[in-house]
Length: 538
Image (cartoon, rainbow, N blue to C red; front, top):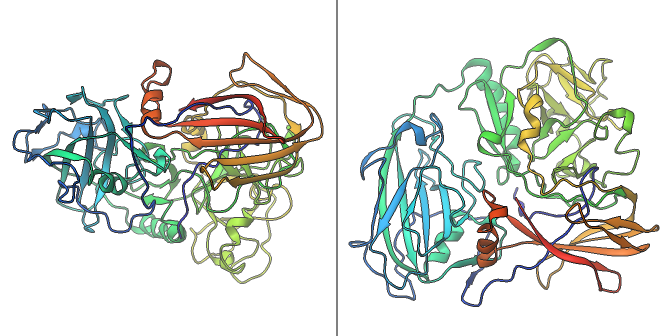
């Protein structure tokens, strides 16, 4: 099962300010490339033979590293067994017509499928090196192995040395893509390079990992998690290399529609999140019943098999502030966007569950709690309605595809999924806040809406959130400004910034260390601007 990882930017959830955006058209000398977002047969990045521009041999254009020689060993500091730093690289003798550089790092793991560990494109032509753990140079593409828009350090499983290939491309034009940066894969970049490559140079290094694969119960439970997420492998990854935790990686955006049907909102926006690499969700592989339950007042309590986090039913700050479902803050799928611009569920993920027969969820987990126990549908494995204990909302009935000892079951009555964690929780429960990167922090007063819909404008690719408010309301963009809006219907249009416009934004001091930006536009029912457009980056 696949899905387009387009960041549906819309508004719900409590705490952040009204949406904003502006500017961001590409320059006239940009080569725009539209390519498939779901490549199936990646190829090794080599000097293209179908280039429409003269291709220079790599004999004079040379790539080197002060950390390793070609054919040598990659130091541990640059791997996931070390500090996870990116290697220093430098090059010289680029063609005089070079307009930019592209750096790709690839590997061929045991299964023979090409993987991209590092993708940087639109590196300025004046650049001749990348420092250790470089940042703010060029635009980062979406690496494999759940790293997202970042460097994915060597973590290949299996015995023996793996070869990691760094390839620098001198190109005759900067690259622009129709996809947002979190969808720009190595395959998409290499396809784009076919028409603009002037010269290439390659550096190969190897690394051998010393890892211990899970055994016994941990291996069984790892297989259960991997099997449960298999229908969603296009958007979810599971890594059990650490042997004590399964790391579930995703960007937290489902394939089903979002935000439709919300009747209370504060114009929050759900964007793709970097639940990847070291930021992936850690699910204990050997769950153990704790001496007492652990409260789950705020934040995620688990993650669904499609990679979307699952929260408890309460508003931010605790259940004394209200039930999100009762208050009308959830969409028809029982999810919404939260204060960190993330999409998550607060109740049974019924749109996810609709992707399989109802009885499927009697025996197959719909998610995994942060204590390692599985979350199932409404029934036990025998089809009977699952009883829920008075502790956390689960039971001890055996399930064929979940760990022994305990399991959670969803229900249509609060607390919907669980009221607490029955097992010893993952460290992610305490450290969950560090996983989120909101666009901005200024507060806005929630107000009631109706007729909320989220669609895509087919003419320009902008996402369009439309809603109606029966009362006047105020929004803001920076926390120091405000815009009064009369009662009526409004549209928030938003789209990921790409190409040279993105490169220019990321070069600004205010966006240092950031990798993605979005343009926001605000219109009333008549199509007139209701507040200035603005760009937000993270």
